[in-house]
Image (cartoon, rainbow, N blue to C red; front, side, top):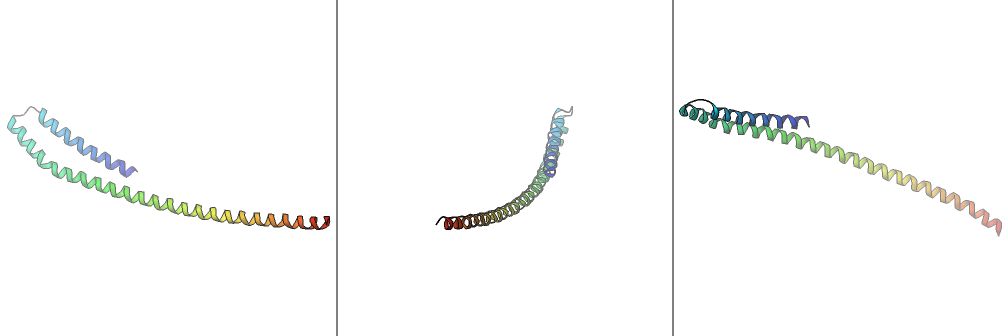
Amino acid sequence: MSNNRSGVFIGGLMLGATIGALTGLLAAPRTGRETRKLLKKSANAIPELAEDLSTSVQIQADRLSASALRNWDDTLDRLREAIAAGIDASQRESQVLKRQTAVEDSDTVPQQLERS
């Protein structure tokens, strides 16, 4: 999860830096020609920035996907173990009940014979 947060933080940092740079250029006391040159340079850098941001987001998505897959596999393994344990416990309980019933039945047969 911390990798996901760091990717979001880096993306936000890059976006904030871009917005700050553009705002600084527009508010700076420069001539129109100088400002246009700086804006052109900044505009030329935007595709590279977008590509870097896209790559960062893709890496984070891949990490998140791999983490989710591992968690899913772990959950399925625990579920399988729990089901197997439940089946074993159910079978043992069934055997205990059968033995108890057999013992009870064997106790009642001699009593019935004595009454006869």
